[in-house]
Length: 380
Image (tube, rainbow, N blue to C red; front, side):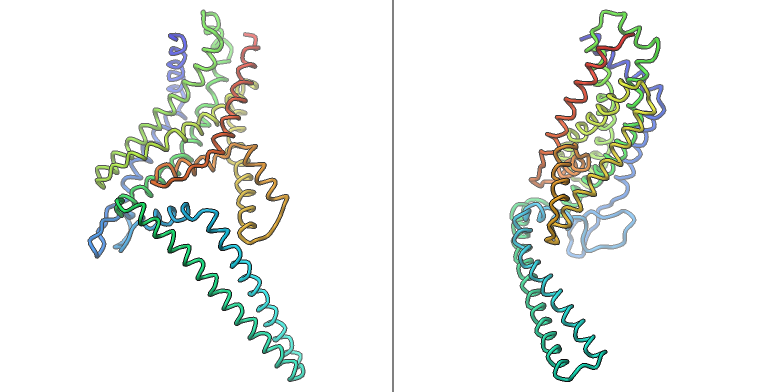
């Protein structure tokens, strides 16, 4: 155990020599302070305390409306979308019929068709337009019914949550979202050199010459990087939590529920770059692969899943898009969905998507297992 902790401590010594990690810590601290300073408590005309932008003008409301909107979306869920799909389909078809009838009427007028034909087309257009208006009213009625039902559920479940509490939660969740992107981009660059530097000539020889098992070396270096990341992340969270607490009087402890999800994301991206670093012993290649995976590959998956959702909302069937989208959800961890889970964990909203965690756990075991087996076979 002493050897394991020594390797963890050696990772900190290695990190102090890397300007990237020190810059990451500084950036996280500056971001947390700036995020606290970017909001203010505002009093509305009816005497309600709300949270709003520090550089915004006088307002009659704050971020609490966004809290309600997200809560309503969660409570409505897929059932509401299914209930709206039928009226939405009918509305779209009625709109298409009205557009065709109007186009035919315009063509008849331009071509100076017979009065009887123009009159018939005018009648068809009016009937199509009235049908469209009726379908529109029906759709709006169903949408309003669902919205009112969800709003009532929100008000019932959040009776003890003030507008200021909601605003602080929304502001914290946004802070988590941007902090995740900032930390992941910096952590990829910082952790990519841990294993290649250790495997450099002379560095690893000192370790293997001592009575230390290779498992302690490998997992000590891996855990050491995560410990440093978690400590830096915890520092940023404490600054943001304490700053907003003193500024608003709201001490939202659920804010820290986002940390485990973020650390899990960091563990996954660290496993990817460590795997590349051990096999290639190249820090630049590990950085490139890390960014390609996190930015480009994740971007393609996000676009594919977004396209599938848009087609579904428009009631357009595309089996290959749906199949690729569903396959991507089970093949790739989904850092975007993990980020969403982290931001949602901050709010008092009962939502949790376990799929990216399950897929990510599988990737984590595969990457660490194969990387360790490769590390054991290396000759030093």
